[in-house]
Length: 120
Length: 111
Image (cartoon, rainbow over all chains, first blue to last red):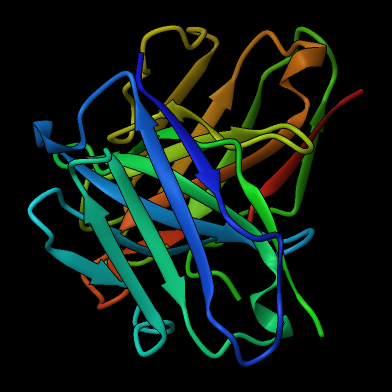
């Protein structure tokens, strides 16, 4: 069965770039039919959709973050990645990667999440 | 402030039924059947419970059901069990540029 696993630094300095990778196992990103997404959750708060990428490389970002977000895919490694630039303390959150069905629009598989703290 | 409105908390006793509402607009909940519900236990990732308003993924108990009327979607949990105590989030596709929006979450307490 498909599993997702986030990886990356847990601490990022203000103004720097947050970089996370999601490794997909048990299935191929290139199989199509799914959007590969990033979602974050501020401490004690709700969920915020950051953006997604299709295996072809097409992307769509939350307008509130669009100027700072880049999502990319490496089909050879079966991974997709998130870069968030010019981070501030407001970007401190648990970051999840998730798979969304292209037809259902539902996030059916999630990674365990990784806590990223922005602090000097 | 979240795009979709959920009650902050609901509670019920074991065996009872509860309903969590998720109110949006005609641009999201009311306009599309792409409403989904997620269960999140403390320190865990969200888990998909309902998709496309009323469909249950394989493995999800039939005690969980979803519906929609106008701009409001609902999640009903029947036969409440202690393990159902968790946070619940709704999500919807939206025609706005945001594309996917979540509710603020509802904390379910099983008394």
